Amino acid sequence: MEITLLALKYFQKTAELQHLTKTAEQLHISQPSLSRTLKSLENELGVKCFDRKGRNIVLNQYGAVLLRHTERIMQEIEDIQKEISDMKEREGMNVSLYLYAASTLISSLLMAFHKEYPDIHFFIVQQQTEMEEKTPAADLSLFSSMYPVDNDHTVTLLEEELLVAMPQDSPYANQDEITLSELSEMGFICLPKGRSLRNITDYYCQMAGFVPHIALESDNPETAREFIHTGLGVALIPCVTWHTVQSENITLKHIASPKCYRYICLSWKKDAYLSPAAQKLRDYLLQHFHEFAATSMGENEQK
Image (spheres, rainbow, N blue to C red):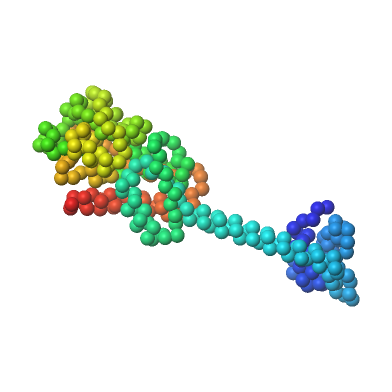
C-alpha cells in the first residue's frame, strides 16, 4: 500500500481528536474502516503512531513526526487549490480579441466597456492577414466581409458603403457621384494584399472591368489621408469605420456603379467554452457597436 492523501487526512483528524469513535463520527465513516486505514498507514511506515491510554489514544514520537509532515502536506494541497482557483478567476477576467477591422472605432467602444467592467482585461491582436471563414482562435474576432455573415457563432454588426476618397482639386470632385470604371487610369491607395478591405477593393474594381494600379499600400487611415491629399491616388473608404480620412482637403464621393459595400462582423469560438468576461464583451459589442458608429460619424460631421 502507498501512503495516500485520504490516509493522511484520517490520521490528521485522529491526531487532533485522539479518539477513534469521535474521529469516525466526524469523518462520517465507520470506526472499523478508520482503524483499518490507520493500521495500513502504520504498516507502510513500519512504526506505531499512537499509543493507547485508557479509552483514548495519544500520539507518540513517530506520530508527532508524521503529523508535522502531514500538516505541511495538507497546507500545500490547500495552497495548490487556492492558487489554481485564483489563476482560473484571473483568466476568467481576460478576453482575447482578434481585430481585423474597425480598429479606429473599437478603441472608444473598449474604453466605454472598461468603465462598466474595470476588472476585465483585453488581449488584442491585429493580424497582418485575414482568414474570414476561419473559426477564430481568440475569444472574439472582429472582421470585415464582402457579404453579411450570420450563423450560430457570427453576427453582422454593420453594413457600410464604400466611398471614393479623392483630393478636392480632382477633376471628379464636382460630381455628385462617380462610376468606378472612371477611375481605371488612376492610382489606388490600398491596404496590403491579403487584408479584407484590399480584397474587396480588388473585387469591385474587377467588377468595373479593370485591375487597380496600386500607388501605395498602407493600413493607416491617417497615412492614406495624407497621400490622397497630395494627389498620389484615390482610395475606396468605408464610410463609417474609416471616416477620419475625410478632411477639408479631401472629398468623398458615392459610387453609382457598382454599388460597393462591406460588412463588419463579430465572431466567437464555435462549439467551445466562452468565459463570462468574453460573453459580456460580446454582448456589449452586439448592443452598442452601431450606436458608437453613429456617434463617431456625427462627431466627424461636426468638425
